Image (cartoon, rainbow over all chains, first blue to last red; front, side, top):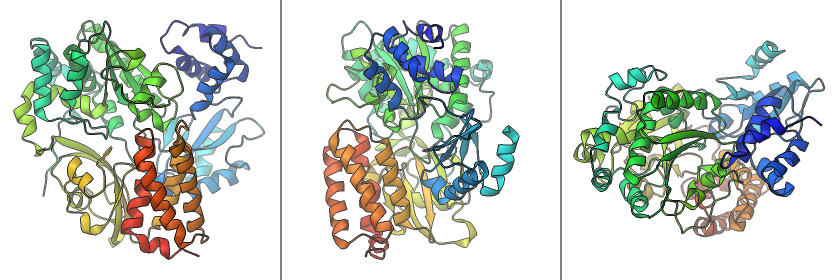
Length: 148
Length: 407
């Protein structure tokens, strides 16, 4: 088991530090390792259920391993009418996985998201939180290639 | 034709947001100095008289809210900025924070002095890590120059929960808990963060404060609609030529927003509907477009001003399909604490799915109206109360689109 102590302990005395600790874990690993939640429960003196309950409440906390690049497609109404479903099809086809899945090489995870606040040029996707605006099915291969 | 009037966006594009000297040279932090020379009560009275109402969607008089915290006796008080803008189609707070973070900090510092708070938090949505960086730089620059005095500000990042835009859910999240709304009363100005008096205001509300203090309540009150004075920042999305943001006095009409500032609909297509205030807003048909956008005028037509998102749909758009998508949003974002919302959003989405796929019947429409009416009255927080609005307003104004899909 990797030692998560240093990361989590840095937030031990921060008021409301549990969520800050989760953010820090995610910055280091790109996800929250499941056993790190047990550690967080210990440090913050909470039940494991409570610590897990907080982590699982927030959709941007990824519990368990995810791809190196987390690709999120906005499906809120403005992106929906701008053709987000065509972008979803293109991503699924290009990566050979379905929404919610991770590629075998551990590189890409596909997820739906709600509005990311870049609605001036829809549809929008984000890759590790960096927004790509005005995307289309045609632009997907080039965007993915850039990261490969 | 109304002209754009920039109060909260006054420095947008004119200063380097990462150079506090630019903000100071543009007159920044003079209002805080002036505030410090005023008595707390007089300062709050000035804000109250300006008529500024919260820009986050609830529209409560800002000075009155502050007064609750001033009169609450406590050894510790907090100022919290709600930067968790999650209403689909909204990005005004991002524009303000990216272009002029100091005006937000100055507004918060004025509030802190007014109510007697030493600690502030900016709760910024998890989708904006790049904005968090800007805010942290702005805070350290203001602290280095000693401009904030004994008031310190910390940025906390959300993690993708729409419900945290609700102020008590936001407070729970800062405390490190699941973002579930609290029962009210007590309200946050009296008992908020860690049980202490807490003012939670939206980014746009705080960004208005320095100008109100500097130019006075009479000046502010004379702008826009008398019962909701000032300006409002709008973000235009959907089938509109200028998909952009702008700031206008609150007596501007919806038609001026779409056809004037928005440049109308592209490709000569005809207008079908507009949804204002984000995904929880009502749908508005053509015959109501001459309504002014102020809070009360919008409420009078069963719509909301909300966050100022303006989502335009042309004649080719399928209303039922869009509303199905919206009901899925609410099912996903409901926190599950109260059953009318947890169950209601799920059943509403189910019925919309059925109707949209040709499996609905006429009784479903009546059932949706009944469910929506119940939810709007008894859900615990604004999320569940507003969730049925898109369904109810489209059933009212675009019923034909539903009946055309019935089995």
